Every structure is written in structure tokens, then in C-alpha cells.
Image (cartoon, rainbow, N blue to C red; front, top):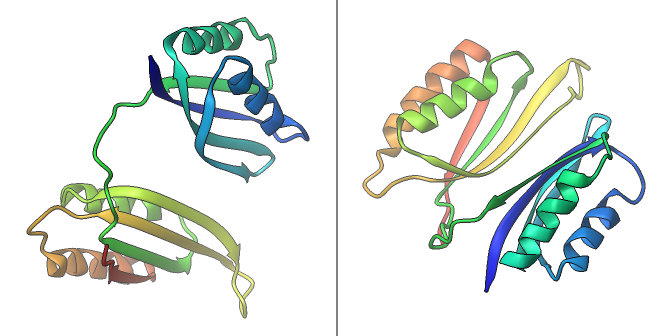
Length: 173
């Protein structure tokens, strides 16, 4: 019986790394269905959703455990089938980079039971100042009956304390 698994990995960036992972999946009868892969600093990391039989999963697991390749960490988790969740809020953040930005934002979202579905962030050079600028985009799902004004009030406080610009946009599905 086919099941879904998520393979997460991180390793030193090198040519052929994705091919190595694709070969691991293919050689054990797996179907690569979805992925998010990116270079972070000098590392390459990501998550891959695969469909594979339980025998294929066991074979992939054995191959990972027996691999003495120390520059690549791989973890495999069974994906629990759940209904598709669509984002209903998008947040865009921009401001001077400083420690704690991600914690402050995600803490408020968690307090209000807002689920983060996709999060990307980066630090780039400010256009005029050249100072490090933190930029993030979050696609989230707020629960039914959610009070958007309460979120705006909470994030306004963070904007003031951390000199951030936070835009919140409702997303129609």
C-alpha cells in the first residue's frame, strides 16, 4: 500500500545533491510529489513529499541509516493525511534586521491560533542605507470567527517596538 512520507534534509551545498535524493526515492519505487528546496548560507536544505510503499519506505530508511555520508543529514516522517488547508491571511514584513522578529510575530500568531502554512524570510541590504533589512512573507490560516482587528492591534505594538512595517491582507480562496 502506498503512503506519503516527508523527507527532510540538510547538507553542504554541492552539485548533484538533489539528484542523489531523487535517485534514493526512485530506486525504492517512490514518487516525488512535492518539494521545497533551497540554499541557506553554504548549506542546501529542504523537504520532499514522496509516495512510496511501506516496503519502499523501509528500504529508504535502511539506505539512509547505512549511509556513511556525513555531510548530509536526512530524516523521514510519515505524513498524516489531512484535508487541504488554504491560506486566508497573508502577512508581509519589512524592517531593520534584529534578533527576535520571527519569535515576536510567530508568538502572536500562535496565541491567536493562526496556523502558518508557508513562511519565507531573508535579510538583504537596504536600498539607501545599506543596513541589513529583514523581509518575510507568511501565508497563514486563521480559524473561523477570527478577530482580524485583534491581530492588527497586537502586530501594531510589534511594529512600533521593532520599527517594522507589517502588512496583513485577507486572501480569498
